[in-house]
Structures are given as structure tokens and as C-alpha cells.
Length: 271
Image (cartoon, rainbow, N blue to C red; front, side):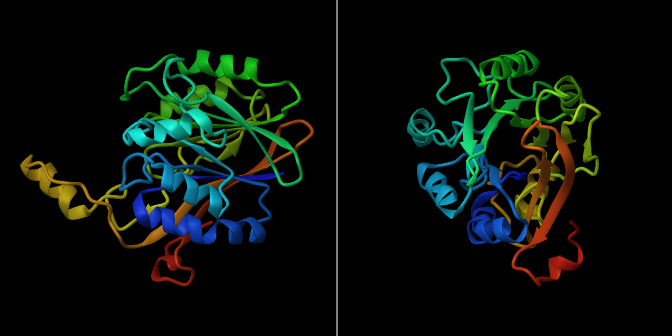
């Protein structure tokens, strides 16, 4: 079985590359399931019902979120009624959304998907370690393949949780920093791990935002709208190969794909 987690989709450029390439990538890379973090999909912050529908229709099987989950209040109805989108499982029980879900591949294999928010340099949330334990207790035991999107700032947070869950989930893949890390590996217990799978959107930017606007505010402290950048669009993510019978990962591979194919960014992209 082969799963792809697409890193933080940023604004219209990120949505465009995902919507136009998801099914092609499924065929070319022999993907059984496509999961995407879309908490920055609406102009760089939040997600709307319309964007949720576009991503699902384009071929994304499940959507994970993060600290900007409720930035667009209209998404709450989707969080409360749809089963292809999850909130961070260490949010309070009263927070809108489901803490985990089960998706099925086109061959019918069930895959448990959940996300968590880190606590270092992030908003106050419940303990991600305890929340992970709770999710794994609640998931049916026959669901052997389980993927966690850990939306966190600190690599120490991510590595600690990855080691804690080694052998209990198929993959712990990080999002949030928008910068892909080169530490992809499979732990001894069979859990694939990477601190951050990167960002899907404009890379001629500062983590997806206009360079000029970010630098102006940084240097002068004058508030300025941080608009989504437009150039050097790439799809970043990570593929994990998993033994569907045991839930153990067998391989992990980073993706850094230029859009459109053949663009000048292709010479700088890897994967």
C-alpha cells in the first residue's frame, strides 16, 4: 500500500497544483490514498466549504488541519457533518470536528487518519501524547494502517512523539513549518517518520507569503497584509509504503514536484 501526505496547501497556487495533479499523481505513483493538510488553503489561512469540496472532488481522500482550523467560521458545518476532514485530536472535546476518521482505499483497505497540534511555540492545547493514546484506543483494532499528521513547530516535539508512537502507527509526518526536512526514515518498530513534509504552493516566498511584505514588516514593524506569493509553485509531500497486513512502513520518500512540469523550478526540485 502506498500513501501520500501533501504538505500545507497555501492559497490559490497550492490549491491549483493539487486540484490539477492529484489524480495524475495517483496513477503515475500508484497511490492508494492521498491525504492533504489544507489549513492554509484559503488565502493562506483557514479553509472554506467551497475549497473543501474542490479538494475532495479533485481526488484528495482526506484533509487534515492545524492551528488555523477555525479561521473561516463557515467551515464548522463541514467539520461537524463530513467524515473526510479531521480537527487536531488534542483540541477540547467540545471543539467542532472529529478527532479521527477512517478512509478506505479504492481496494477497500481501511486507513485511520488523525492529526495533532504540538505545544512548543503553539497555542495552548491538550497533551498530544495522551491524545494519541486516546485515538489509538478508540480506533478499531482491525484498522492496521494508521497515519498521523503532527502539526507542530519544534523538531523536538515531532521526534519525541514519533519515537513514542513507533510501532503503533504506520507514519508520523510533520507539517506546519512549510520547510521540508531531510530526516525521512523508518523507525525500528515500523513507523515512517519525517519532521516536516514541506509546503505546497509558491516557493519564491517566505513560507508562502510575499517576500516584500514580510520583509517590510520585519524591518520597520509597520503592519502589512501578508499576501500569498505567486511564483515557483511546487507540490511538496511524502510517500510512505506500508504493509497493509501489519501496518508497518517499509519505505518513505520525499516529493518536491514543480508545477507545471517542465517549469524552471524543475531543475531545483528533488524527489
